[in-house]
Structure formats: structure tokens, C-alpha cells
Length: 433
Ligand SMILES: Cc1cc2nc3c(=O)[nH]c(=O)nc-3n(C[C@H](O)[C@H](O)[C@H](O)COP(=O)(O)OP(=O)(O)OC[C@H]3O[C@@H](n4cnc5c(N)ncnc54)[C@H](O)[C@@H]3O)c2cc1C
Picture 1 (cartoon, rainbow, N blue to C red):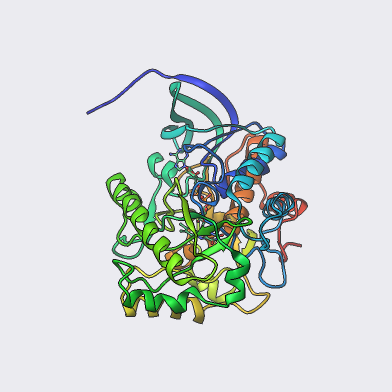
Picture 2: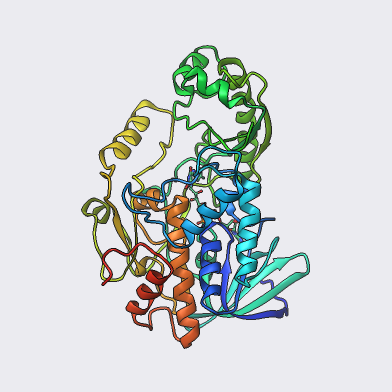
């Protein structure tokens, strides 16, 4: 069936960003601060992606133990969030409402044009350049014309629909399990800390008592995110296909069932949680892995092992190889532990990130940032965490601004110019001279 319509070109901008998660926000702020006209479209009702609507309660490390590697916009977001968040004792923990407002404030301050409930559905292209992105919103279908586009959808949705090459999961296209994160109220954190009880230790007792339908030993638990609030990153949705709405629907239903089991578990076994209540499950499913967009280079596990330095290095990162096990089977759980522990860096170590993992193969004006950049599977499991997404988002924003300013493609400027501008906004570039 062919479906065609005449639609309005509603906006003409220099940089069009699709997706307002950590990567999209960093890209939009970075580009707009370099003086170009930016439009960002977000399908959901707020900025932040998994860091807000997805309920992920804590930022992973911004540092390699010695250096603040997610410096620049990443540091600014963390610092400004902590100025407003006085309830949580952990500097990395996220109060989703504070963070939603902070992203909005930072995008508005930078003069980024953005709209919510605006879903990207397709592209128009001429030769190897995208001319328009097509959106569906309350007002109907419309197009946005731009010089440069950035895919920050987490799923590589923009690049895939434009016809870019993508990779998915392992050799059988299987991805890490997802998690439906959750918000918990009524926790007595002082009482819990005083007890010294580790939830992982008492999980085994709960397994014996039949609290859960599926005994999953990989339990990350609840982080304090407010005075009596906690953010839960627990439970796995095994076998979920993140690119299929039927599978996602089943996964969300299953996630909400799991949350009730966790409520029973925490109330029954955990000091300080006697009156805990499930306040909400997240409004976005927590997808760890889906498409990886093929760029001009595929950052890989050997680069991680050798802590490689690149001529076109635009950042460095250090989070370990964290591929969540695909099942609760002992062998899969053991392989997860082997990888995360055996390949863990020492203090001060990191791997280089080349610009070429953001330049989408086959396109003159399409960049990608965030969870779906061009990597192999193990490397994706490291760079996917939010400080990693701030790094690649910031770079995509600055690169798009340079290309738009000079009216050239994403490969047609001196990489030195990009590195210099990144350095000027605080990026960690120890190998740039
Ligand atoms: C369960 C779970 C736990 C995690 N725990 C941690 C942790 O503890 N610490 C940490 O640092 N990281 C953690 N991560 C990783 C991290 O949260 C994500 O990898 C990161 O948020 C990815 O950022 P992103 O900007 O690439 O994508 P996302 O955060 O997924 O944002 C993508 C945005 O694009 C929008 N979008 C998608 N498609 C369209 C479309 N067609 N049109 C318009 N908009 C669209 C989405 O609505 C969303 O807002 C976790 C991830 C999961 C799933």
C-alpha cells in the first residue's frame, strides 16, 4: 500500500535533533550555544528520555577515578541538578522532576526551539543528504527542513528509517533484557542504612519463600532519590524485542506485575521499607540495547582493551563492559560477572572515542549520538550509560553547528576545529595538543 500526502514545511532550521534524552539535550544545548538555529522533537511529554520518563535513578560515573571525563555539558547538568536537589545525599542520584525542569531551563536559555508529543516518522532525501524530517503531532503531519540532522532516538530510529545500515544485539540479533524502572514512596532511609542489610543477601530467602514468579539474582535495587523516595532499577524483561510494539506492550504489562512482587519483597524483608508504596512505574520502558547505527568507524572491544587513542578523538570514557545476562541461568549470570569484572579499568584509565562513530555511513548530513552510536556490542554496553551519552551528544551538537555555519557536510571541516571548540567548552581531551 502506498500512503502519500501533501504536508506543510513548518520549520526551516540549521540543525534538527530527534529525541530529547541525555544525548539529545546535550546536542541541542551545545549546537544552540554555538549560535545556530536548532529544533528538537521529542515524542514523549518531557525531556530526559530514560533519565526522567524512563525512571533510571542514578547517573553512572562521570569520572575515570582521576579525571572528570564527561566534562562540559555533562558536568554542568550534574552540578546544576545538585544545586536544586537538596533531599538526596548521593550527588549522582536523580530526582526526575528536578531534572525534567533543568533540561527545559537549559534548552530555553540556549534558545532551542523544541516540542513534545512530536514523533518523527520519516525522512526525505536527495542524493546522500537528508532534506526533511517528517513528524506526526497533535496539529497533524508536518516537515522540518534542516542542513544537519542528529539521531538521538536511542533506538537509531531516524537513521534506520532514512536507510542507514544498523546492527542489532548479538549474532542472533538478541539484545540485553529491558527493565521497567519504578518510583517508591515512604522509605525510612535512616532506618534502612542503620540496619546494614544488603537486599541481595535476603533475596535468596525470598526465592525460597516463593515471592517471585521468576527468581532473578541480578538485582540492582532502589536508590535514594528524595527524602523518603527511591528509584527502582530492578527486574528484567527477558526476551523483549525493543523494536516491536506488541512485544513492548507485553513487556510493560510484565514490568508492572514485577513491581508488585518487589513491593511485597521490600515490605516483608527490608528494614526501613515496612510501609513502602509503589508510587509509579516509569512511562518509558527501560531499553538497554536495540539498534547500533553503522558509522565511518565501529568502536570495538579491542579499542577498549588497548585504551586506544585516536587522531580524531573527541572524548574518552571508562565505564565497564556491562552486558546484562539474557536469562536467569547460572552460566549467563556467570558470564556477565566475568566480563564486567575481568575487563574493569584501573583508576585513571579510559578508552578514546573517535568522531567517526557519530558520522553515519552513507550520509553527508546525518550524525548519531547516545546509546545507538557506531560500536560493537560490548562497547555499546559501556558507552550507553548517561555520562557517555552526554559526551557523544555534546560532540554531535558542536559538529553540527560547525557544519551548518560553514554550509558543508559533517566530514568537510578540519577535525582540529571541532576538537578546539570542544576543549573550549571543557571537554576532556587529554590527547589534543
Ligand atoms: C533499566 C536501565 C537502567 C539504566 N541504568 C543506568 C544508570 O544507572 N546510570 C546511567 O548513567 N545509565 C543507565 N542506563 C543507560 C541510560 O539510561 C541510557 O542508555 C541513556 O538514557 C540513553 O540516552 P539517549 O539520549 O541515547 O536515549 P534515551 O534516554 O532513550 O532518549 C531517547 C529519546 O528519544 C525519544 N524518541 C525516540 N524515538 C523518537 C521519535 N521517533 N520521535 C521523537 N522522539 C523520539 C524518546 O522518547 C526519548 O526521550 C540504564 C538504562 C536502562 C534501560
